[in-house]
Length: 327
Image (cartoon, rainbow, N blue to C red; front, side):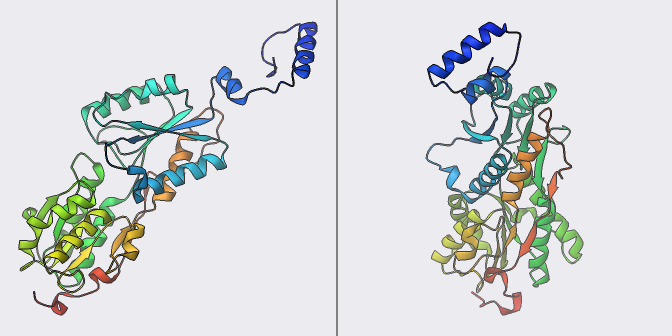
C-alpha cells in the first residue's frame, strides 16, 4: 500500500499508516522493487578462473569501471556474477534467480553452448549486451571495437618501417576479436602489396603474460631473420619482451614490437610499448546504456556496435629495419 498499488479501504489504509508511524517504519526500496518485479540492478557476468584474478587485469577493470560509472549515473546498481567457463550456460535463469533487470556478459567464447544460451535470452527479449565478442550468423546484442582496423594499423606501421614479415602472436580462435585481428593482419599485407603474409609466422597464446613468455621458445629462433613482432594484447607482448630479454634480445634495439589494448603497463615498461588503444572504459559505459535502453520505459539512443581504435607509437617500435643492431 506504500506504493499506492491495488485497492485498499480508506479505514484500513489509515490504520496501517498509523501503525507504521508508531513503529518508525520506512519502506524498504529493495522489497518495493522486488514486488514491482524491478530490482534496479544490472548483472555483469565475468568468467571465473582459479588462480587468475581477472578483475585486476586492465581489460576487465576498465570495462567494469565504465559499466559501474554509467549505471551509477543512471540510478542502477551493479551485481557482479562469476561464471565458470565449464559450467552449463543459462542466462535466462540469471534473471529468475538474481532478479536483475538486465545483464552484461564479458569474456564469452564462440562455442555451441554459449550460442544456445544467448539464443534463449534473445528470443525472450530480455535486456542484455555481450561485450567484445560477436557471433557470425546471429543477431545478438553486442558491442565491440574495430579489431580488424586495429590490427591493420599495427601491422601496417611495422611494414612501413621496412620490415617485410611480421611474427604474430594471436589469442584463441574461440574469441571473435582473435579472428578479427588475424583478418587485419592479413589485410595489412594485402594493402602493402610488397609481400604476402606467412601463416607459419602466426602463433597462439591465451592473452596472458605467461603465454607470451612461453611463446619465446618458438619465436626467438626466428629473430635472426624476422625482426618485427605483433602481439594481440599488451600482456602477451610484455611476456614476450621479458622472455626475449633473457635471451639477449631487446625490444626497440634488436627487434620492433607492438602490443594491443594500451594498458597502463604499456606506458611504464622499458622500453615503452607501442600499442593499439581500445576505448575499454567507453565500451563499458555504452554497454550499460545499450542494456538500459532495452528496459521498458527507458529512453532509447543510437549506440554504435563497433568503436574506433587508435594506434600509438612508442619506443618499442620506433626503430626502422636498417637501424637494428644486427644480433
